[in-house]
Length: 135
Image (cartoon, rainbow, N blue to C red; front, side):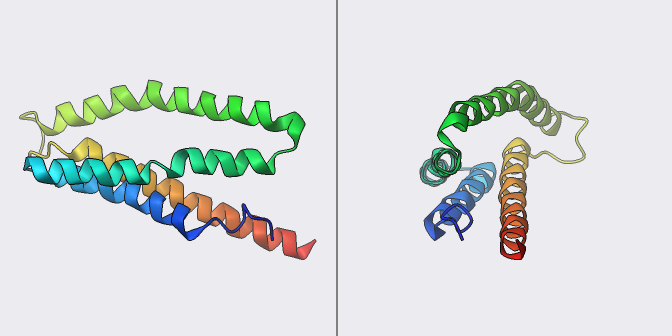
């Protein structure tokens, strides 16, 4: 089993902290809670470069540039889609058209996307691990 197939518990913890931070920020109503949420998000954001480092270490030397380029492309596309989407979600949930006022809705959506990414990574790793053992 390679090191990537068994990410460290700290990497998993950081991924969870990222989602928890977005959720608490969405619920925050006071400055101390906002600051605490931002600290949690900062601690969780370590998972992003750490995951890329794990992926890069698994790639053959001739493919490392391609992997980093693909990761940067995904990051750029995420920004191009995510910023307008999150702005629209925020605008809708503070408007009169919303069924209820929820200014943190965009942050909850960010937390949900983080959890979905984490779960899909775990499923992919289990699938990959299973198929490595069967070969």
